[in-house]
Image 1 (cartoon, rainbow, N blue to C red):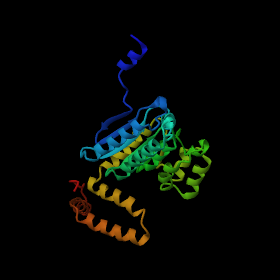
Image 2 (cartoon, rainbow, N blue to C red; image 1 turned 90 degrees about the horizontal axis):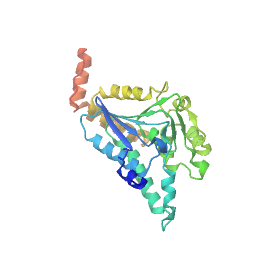
Image 3 (cartoon, one colour; image 1 turned 45 degrees about the vertical axis):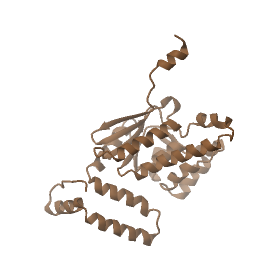
Image 4 (cartoon, rainbow, N blue to C red; image 1 turned 60 degrees about the horizontal axis):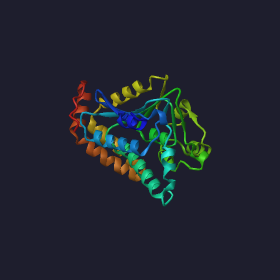
Length: 274
């Protein structure tokens, strides 16, 4: 058998793994040899998985993890460079890929369930963007974060969108302009991650955090997550006006009535997720 035939018959290793840990879906980036770079295929599979999870009532939270030493090194530069030979030098493909990646990141934000990143290693460029796009993040002590596009002449403009919505401007600009990595402890200090845990425990810690949120009313979490991101883009008066409308709607929900009643009666609430 020729080497080519052997490769053709070899089973394809999935680039995204999915498993359920109770009510938590764990999505694991599985391109360790490519440092889990976000190829066109991996972006598509992540987006499809998120869409599927959004309508699955059995899933109450998501953890995004990765295999290998790197969480994600960002876009697959070899894949991008290969399109330089296109008639337009890759312009149409670059636009398509960047828009697909942006849509996937927005799908995380719009998912009506909490999404927690479990970062075990390096998260750079679009990999750092992925962490910043998640609602919560748990990092290993060994994790590092960077937006180093400036070092190769490609400013991290799309990662900048998520990064600048997570950390103060001066810290975001320093990361973007210098490209220098920051430690997990520094990432926690500026608000990029919630918790830093011993190396090797980040996945379990992220699942535990997602499970803590999963104990709440799914309806309440859905309302609250959507409201959080919407009000953040409003001026103060509009944000309060919008939040008051959300609170009123929330008060009319069955779970709010049950939760308040349970608090007054000093008992555990029984959620119906509506």
